[in-house]
Length: 217
Image (cartoon, rainbow, N blue to C red):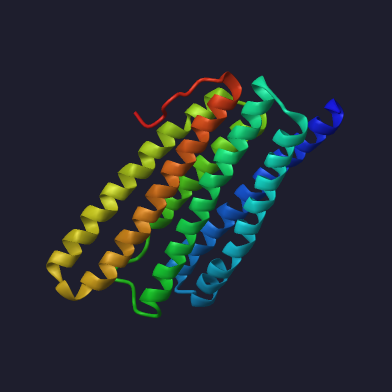
């Protein structure tokens, strides 16, 4: 029975990692669609979210099965609880990637008010954060999980710079307001993804130590 449980727990973790990779690709595609004005890629990002949602439900069923049939306790139970929390965060991150793709579709083929430099750079930091927490999840690396706080600080700084610059451009030229608001929303969605990555880091710490540790302070 123990070997079956261990195998299924490994399967759960593998599926969580797969879901993270899918969400990471959605984020990349959403940013590329915005930068390159690739509306087809934006539509594909929206449609691909169904697969992310389906995998979330699959992992939920597996977690429920593990609890119901194996009655785990202590560290094993924490692994399953953390899995639940992590896929919830990943699903929301996927939704935010869709929101960014919808920004691309709303702007359409309209010329961008400025070259997109900071938003892709911000997205790169977000991806670094996601990689850090998933590496921490697979290896139960507490220092890797805690490092997400530093990365999230960088993401927040980018967000502040982007908002300040876009607001100044909109003040100078009110005709840019509509697009400027959309770009601010895109940056906001990335900032929220960074927050969810921080939440995953907290779950990794809980999974390993059995205590709650805030990484947002």
